[in-house]
Amino acid sequence: MKDYHINIFYSEEDEGYIADIPDLSGCSAFGETPEDALREVQTAKQAWLEAARAAGKPVPAPRYRPVIYQAR
Image (cartoon, rainbow, N blue to C red):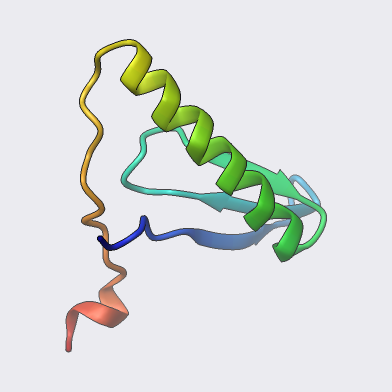
């Protein structure tokens, strides 16, 4: 199974890195470094998936692909 795509970018406003998972609405995290943000969003992903399953909500399949990969 493919895993979820993770975006990581620097936020001047927050003065740190933001990581988000487009397929999981609202699933994002902050870190002072890209590695911190990645580690935090992986924790957030597990919490998001557990909460969705506990609430009986559907868990979307990984589908998001950045435009750069869609040309292939």
